[in-house]
Length: 279
Image (cartoon, rainbow, N blue to C red; front, top):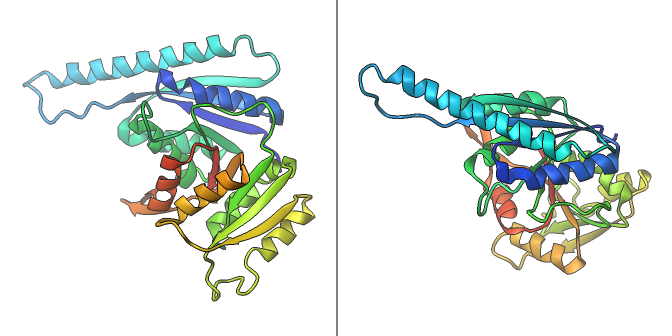
């Protein structure tokens, strides 16, 4: 498997950093970059004066349309000097409740979605919705990149947050193109249960599978010392000088749609490393 279609989604002009990261990755992987610019309509007023509703709705749609077109123009200007990758851009307007379905449809036919961190200064609420849609509805792995972006070279040291779950297995499979290029890969387990599916050899079957793909993987089993497992993983990533974390993405049901679970949310809030997630 290789990343041949990479998607990124912009909902605000300050999301230019993850457009740059997606461009770097597309160049590295010789992939086609799809850019989706969304003008989000957040109008949801509780009341209107009689006869005013149509004008208010139209004004909100007009504003969202302008934002979408401005984003598309920004992308075209940014990418105009980029001759070493194939790319395309389109813009769309969506109300808050329909952003998910729009992103999911694009993500469903992509190999990887590259997005910025959904938490922190300037992140905005739309980015979290976009990540959830790509992961849970689109079934696409998501690479969440920090504000510093991605280096031109592939990550040399990758940590796999392994808890023997189906989500972690999916994330590992989807990360194989990057794992094969890494110098070292650590399969990290935090306080694994002796009654887990791998019993007395947690991580053993995974490292064997990875080695058959040419991945140089080792196992590290850690005692839990931090209040949250995500804190323990972040500490370990810093200790070994990891350039990227691979982990399963977990969610909770909300009106039949998943939202990011606490462990996933905590990891994205605290780590400054790129995180590749899949569900």
